[in-house]
Amino acid sequence: MLTKRIIACLDVDAGRVVKGTRFLNLRDAGDPAELATTHALSGADEIVLLDITATHESRSILIDTVRRTARELFIPFTVGGGIRTLQDAEAIFNAGADKISINSAAVRDPSLIERIASRFGSQAVLVAIDAKKRLELNEYEVLVTGGRKPTGRTAVQWAREAESRGAGEILLTSMDRDGTGSGFDCELTAAVSSAVAIPVIASGGAGASDHFVEVFGSGRADAALAASIFHFGIQDIRELKTVLQSRGIPVRLPC
Amino acid sequence: MIAIIDYKAGNLASVKKALDYLGVEATVTDDPKVVSRADKLILPGVGHFAATAQLNGNGLRTAVQERIAAGKSFLGICVGMQWMLMGSSEAADVAGLGAIAAACLRFDSNELKVPHVGWNQIAKVRDSRLLNGIESGAFVYYSHSYCAPVTPETVAVTDYCCPYSAAIETNNLFGVQFHPEKSGPVGLQVLRNFCEL
Figure 1 (cartoon, rainbow over the protein chains, first blue to last red):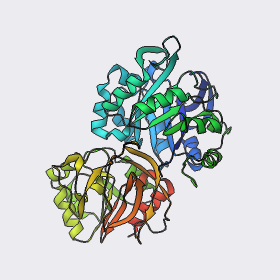
Figure 2: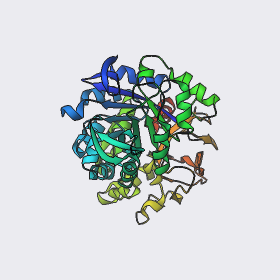
Figure 3: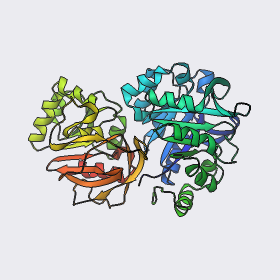
Figure 4: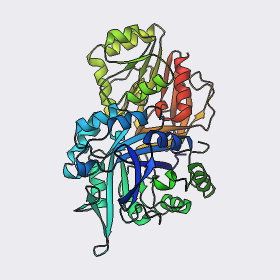
């Protein structure tokens, strides 16, 4: 049976893994290559590395960090942050990434999805969507540039367009929940997952194993991503998977 | 030397990296002359079946066929395995190698998501040199929308919508629909088995 994926995310700033709350208050969590290997050995199904400062500081990703992290990693490895062109993507793939994640640049120029997908295949293109609930509209709005800039588009609309342009997966982050540990936004995740045929990775808010049970159940997520709870040893991935299995959720175990 | 055949369809760095890790000498090449000297061939693949048409343009197809006829082992990965069949409904006008008398079809499901992305299990259906030391129930990483049906060459199946060929093997031809370079220790064992044939 196809299993639900547990993805460990490394938010990287200047070559170090960091983690903040609601995209702010960054603190150091370690070396990306070391953490990626540790997570892979503890049962992570994939690793995502996001250069969280690349977009607004116009820096290109630290290719060396990607190469060093990829070298001994034999599970899927995604890299995002600051990818604006086909050439940016190509450099990341050449450094050893299997998939790239694009966010602001895809909103600005959606044809970027098509160009990268036609060269490297849809399976290699994740479109990352940062969404925030607009209570007055009862909708989820897409924000770009590290969550700083509203776009006026809804998460469901944009996910559908990204799929039709060749995105292979959607990486969906709830900005309301990110870093809070209060649980994934299951309503947001279910709305997007039901609207597209491609897998949806839920992100933002993981704090306990019950949150994963919920997002794989009512949230209809295909995968769930977390960062700080794995880095700081709050949650052991193998233990998390054992809990999920006991609750009837298919996971890769033993791993 | 193992030739990893580059037909300009996606990212070959991962396969090369895995062979480097295993300490196996491998070259990424699109040169038929290099292919003609290789001891073993790997045809990776991601993306669209139509990309395999590139093999026809520059003499690679002939070079590959000659090496296979000379008894050299060949491993197709993902679209590279699909190429070993007659073709695929993804690009009906592009001919595959035709070593297996069947064609690839798209997953047909209203309930399950297509593409099939993630870790799923294999079930071995007979002895296999490629899957030596790997048990039924092992998890491997998939990313695909088209699959090869179960044929006499099938050595392992995976169930998604219906059972399909996870791995095929006939004489010196081997193929895996999953990505061994992305399937952790299980995948590295598959690659090691191929390299040690």
